[in-house]
Image 1 (cartoon, rainbow, N blue to C red):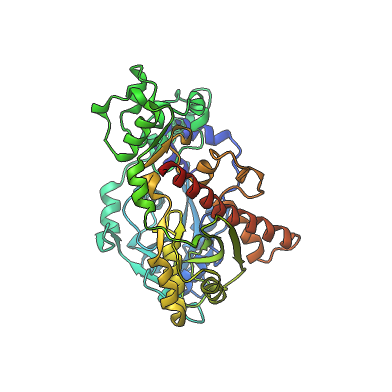
Image 2: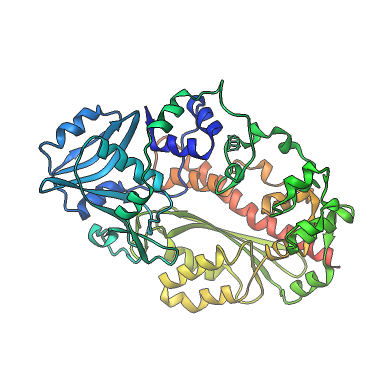
Length: 488
Ligand code: SF4
């Protein structure tokens, strides 16, 4: 018995599908918190008070039986031709059933047609008369007040949305246009296993939206490529072709077949210059308006699909920690850290404006994509601190910029620009000594505190979180000093 997720894997890569059939997988930990049962909230929006509720591993005969008597069916399981589907909502209207898909994001697009078509294919083959096709999704404009309001939290639409978030093709029309008979595919899937699966073959599907979990296994030779391998040329479409032709290193890159970005230029020049490239003039210009005391700032935050606190929208983030290293002109450092559980945005904003000097440059890593946004959100939350908070943003520079703009490159970075990677070149003890090694691990640890789990050592988790976030802001001080030394 297959699910639509199996069909998607099969479509992406037959080998991936075959491996997934036999391999144990780590339990999935979502990047986004879904504390509320969104389906139950959606049911309230749809006015459902009484219904048939499907469960995992249900005999599909149960749902077929419920069709005879129930007005609403929720999460009902149906099967046909070896494919099992979970149907979010079916509503009897006269002698037909309106079909409601559920989308846990804000703008459902017609890019997951395999899922929608698979559900309809099963229902049609079971001769269930379908009426209207709709989708219930989160409302991007909803702002939570004291209580959650499912009526406002959701939108019911009969259309998908385009890239500008405007309604576009009707769901029913899109499904009908994309419908394919799945009989042959399901038969082929049943015959495929790890003995007859295809050999690895690299395509966009191996590294596309997310890197395939079997990538290292399929292409083991790539996990040990030298730092200056042509495969580390950032964004180079023809790097595999060049490698096949015997061009192995960055310095040998065929410049007529690269995109010519500043990052690529820095990478090639670094290899040609013995491993390090620094555009001293541009770096000096970047450093010229940095003034002391310098505040190195880093936030950690959680993301919630359903807003848990007043003033939050769907998928809005909740900052729970910041670390601040303040560097004086003589190089001395002071460290401040704020860590909270639950909603302490007010306390965080007050603490930040108290801790951070009211003059001097503020430095963050990926400032535009993270720290500036967190401060903007805190400013909107705390109108009385609005101006003081936004003045921090006005003084903020992005430490990532010298790397992403190709002002500096060390081949040992092997095409990676994270704080952790760059810090590893500095010869200092760094992230390897910590219990938390990356941002999402910090979030997963914080969840233990926020969800008030029993049998956890709260002090120890808090210590690990302080150490991790503290290392991020400390790493920035080390990298900043390195850039200064390069500019000299
Ligand atoms: S790495 Fe590529 S070839 Fe290997 S299983 Fe994944 S998608 Fe298939």
